Image (tube, rainbow, N blue to C red; front, side, top):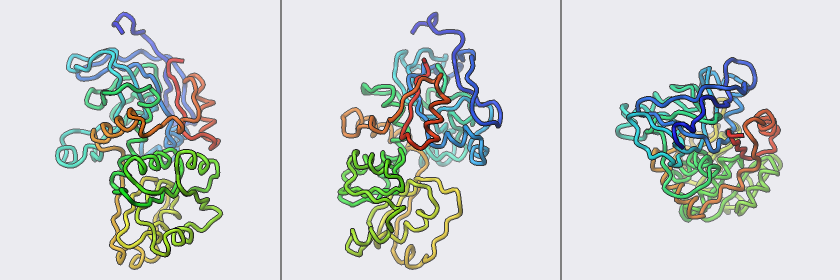
Amino acid sequence: MADRDIPKTMKALVKRDENDGYSYEDMPVPQPQGDEVLIKVDSVSICGSDINLYKWNDVARVIAKIPFVPGHECAGTVVKCGPEASIPIGSKVGVENHFFCGTCLQCKYEDRGICPTMGQFGHGKKTEHGGCSEYTIVSAKYLYIMKRNMSGDEIAMLEPLGVAHNAIENLEVKNEDVLVIGCGPVGLLAQLCVKALGGRRVIAADIDDRRLELATKLGADVVVNSGRENLKDFVYKFTNGVGIGRLCECSGASSMVNSSFSMLRKGGHIVMVGLPKEPLHVENVLTDIVFKALTLKTVHGRRVYHTWEKIEKLVADGIIDVSPIITHKYKMSEYEEAFKTLFSGKACKIVMDPSK
């Protein structure tokens, strides 16, 4: 796209105050400075955490800063570069929404994905920009340049898939049965990652039969409605009294997190992905945690850019198909209907096209 073809104004969703919802308005198309890159947004998906931002609840006050353009799961095409950026025009890119500083201990020696001073794209942290706009500005160092041919929807899905992959990679699932608690988008993607990374059988647990039906379609070997059946009793029966060796907690329900440790076998591994909003309490700390010699890991986002490379290959090679996770598509101008669908609980993953 030549400079002359880039419009002066664009449509965007904007959070300007603490009221519910967003405004849909005209804004100037931003001009890239320094190492910034202007991308035309091809697809943006809505995350469950976006409910907090839409409603501006207590969680939003912690994770976001007004004003901002929402949308952190974003795919785009490079149309213009600042003077210090050199990404080829026309490149397809995914946005690493955790804006790491690059200079702290974690960034230098451990993992840029857990930078303690990170900003966040689509949340107003160190940038007002997000993916719910026709064009957006991102520093080149936060863009993953696609090496393989993938659709905009697939690229946008790499952000949540990366969270799931990071969790399952940490869980060391090869030749293991894995219990995944919570069949929301990340939980379902985690199930796909279990099979892709050599896990044996997936046991999917949720309280929603619609989600469990989708889990079955995506290849879960066993599904359990934990609202009707005692999950711990099921696990011990399934494992002949031993306990499960690998557990991925994606529900974020405090009661499920609390009971997860009791379902693990000795030497078992657990990774926490869901976000509990209440204090955690484990009754039998000695028998359920200490004496079991467990491995507990947590994840926050992706390993930059290790995870992006891994999941791009899995999707491009057809080992993981993210399309069944996308249950609804909307024009961005229909954003109110999109969020209404999200609030209804009937959707898995919703994607929007900002150009419409």
